[in-house]
Length: 145
Image (cartoon, rainbow, N blue to C red; front, side, top):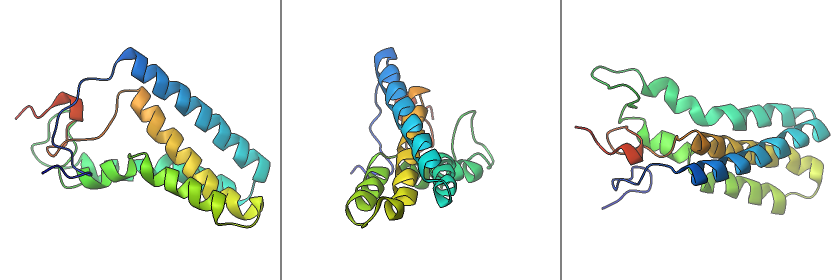
């Protein structure tokens, strides 16, 4: 049985076309997020930076462990890494702050968090980083064990 946060089925390596598409999307959302940060200022700067950097917090804990191969993430943090690198959570954040707030100023910090989070995911995909498999390797690499 496949778990959404720990996919078991290998995929093919990212193609140049897919990486270009992810890169263009990432550049758009990054520019849009920076625009929102400049336009609204204040806490929007903090939430934008959180959205851009926080998805990689699992990496801080994932590369420490005995017996890990090069580029292997600790299997213990794979679900957290995959959850923070899935497109659905930032899209839900963007939708929530777009629909459930009364003013743009109320929406801007949360909206920008989601936009920068989505930009982070897209830029990662452009560089070939995607979901990890159960063993902690890139899904397209398969499990070398």
